[in-house]
Length: 612
Figure 1 (cartoon, rainbow, N blue to C red):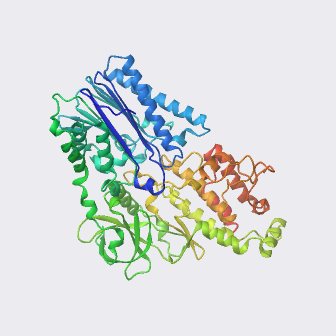
Figure 2 (spheres, rainbow, N blue to C red):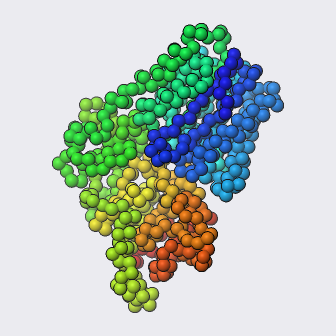
């Protein structure tokens, strides 16, 4: 990329790694690129690699480079810059970038979605500013000290049941998210990823003036691009940017040449002050209590119920869970300060409480779900803190992977198990077996969530627990929720439970991914925690679950000695009832090419009903 300034247009940009990726030692998956020309024209591009795409960082880098090259060629070959010519050039550039990502994915034996990324680009010059976007993030232009959207936000143009679910340029339906804009008059433009959404927007149609005023001031007053970039990085790697959003953040700025030369005494000191002020007025987030500081604090629900927070029962990266003082079955999840200011999260929790599933009202059922029952706010004000939930029997559960491995230790290879398997295959006894009780409960509750119009997306073993033989689903705030007004996106499972095609898109697509995750859980529970795509032999890969899922065959049907074989005794798989094996093979063999034929949760319930 190019960072240059002269008497012509100026461009500066930066990408910073979000706290979530830093903690997991993952690279920044955003990228930016830009070019500047002597006639005052410039090109800027920003891309945000999708978190669940295994090669997202590569995808965003390729996308920004390719779209910049394509738009540069347009400027060099076509001297006429009008709305009509620009609109055609941007569409062609985005199509070319899609094709380039496909070629690069094939070259590396990857799926195009493995490089999943959004894409934003602008071209500016004396004749005006043009830009286009696929996915979230935004483009805001400055004109006479006012700040406006060059293209609509994605949530504004999508169908109401798909808002908050971003699109990537590799999707076949990418054009549904494609937006183009053109303006003849402008003074500057900012292109940015959705890591800045808490700072950039007042609402769906309004940019936050204070933020953009300081950003453009910084670029105008610091003429050295390296210093300008360093100041931006310094600002965006400190609170509140690190506490209010855990995402990667990328922003690229382009401004028209100044009408008069900047006063040399105003170039550096004031510019540095401008960078500092980027977050000065938002430091109120630092004074907000951390979750652990709420022990013994009075809080209240949206409906006015007041209570005191007791002991902390669980802590996570972005929250702590408290038991309500004086109760054994009521809990409150309190978010870290940054997440409490996330308007999308608050809206999602409200949607969860408004769509409380009827099946959870059955107090006698074994399977349970920590579904939010009400928003929780500070008792001394209206500050959003988190949510309340009711959950009985939560003392010291094992996650479902540990539960399956522990069960296997006590039963695997026993005389009872061997004899029972033999008698079942001989038809002397029925196949009823406590092994299938936990998978049956999990399938039932997943199916009920699907039937209620939602999807899970985050069906990781760290969110599914087993205690006294009962399944408990947690972290429901990460689910894909169909509210009355909008659909709220899921936070996606780790690679162990993500299907080869990925886990993103509309709620129906997330449900199909849930089918894969559910089958993985059932398989692991029945085979001592072994993953269905773990295999041994010279034609297999080991270690990385996303690569195993994409590249390894399911080794239990037709294994080949020395090439691909199961890591456990294949007889343990063969001893499973034939109906169970057929479902596994539908999911892990046929379902690899056609996700639609993977067994649904209700199909798993049907086959497991006869075995428990």
